[in-house]
Image (cartoon, rainbow, N blue to C red; front, side, top):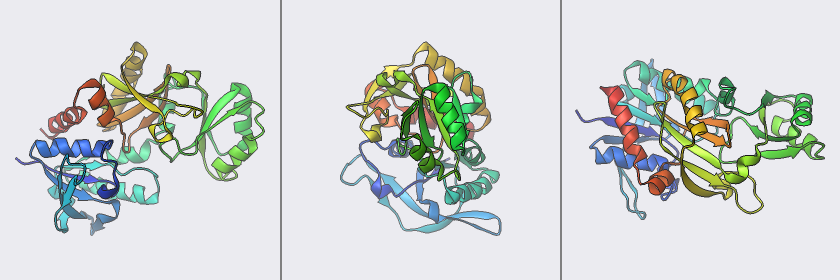
Length: 315
């Protein structure tokens, strides 16, 4: 049987050829003889309870000058597919949620959706860490500037960030009595109308923010450590951090073991967690990255490991 795999993603023409994790997945799928289809979020639709998509057959290449080729657009029932990779980047907005509703209908008709649509809705990437207090730093989710001020006074040094962004966007560090605290709280909460997360600042960030990939709950044995550079304290490649590959520590393994049963139960087949020092800070489930860097640095093939997981669930 030829596996029919579709991907929902941002425009393929705009991806970063050298780093894109979705492209690595598609290369591996094509190498295995899968039939590939490409959607953007806007191409999905539902008619009389039946999920469809305006699909382009897709071919991918390892040529940096021409890494994809799209066939003629065709309308297909999503139920005609075996697997759908939901790889649309945040923001996690209303359109994203509506897309997961459509993918729910595909899943109900036997399509494997990676990751499970309901879990994409239920498990906010920053909020989800609160389910594992034994792994996470002290944290607060609130709209209230008063609570944020109290948390800052208690912790002395905190990081604040929105619940729906990525890549180090709009992350602020505040120390006790910082004169900018009011402005930061007002800006991030939209003057008390939006929830944000605040976490204790972890000094070990100077040694890097680890991205650890888990496949059906099992960790890849090497992590991508994003080490801040220059005057920027953020451990994000998009913010200029330097990537270094390191084997997992004993604490990393402990954190992964704590998460594994819940990830498997919730249909989270491909997850990227962020660990600073001894603490879990985020659980990325929408479109985790890091495959290309870990593949190159550890001489492994994470995408092959993922496709093995997918095939094991397809039976």
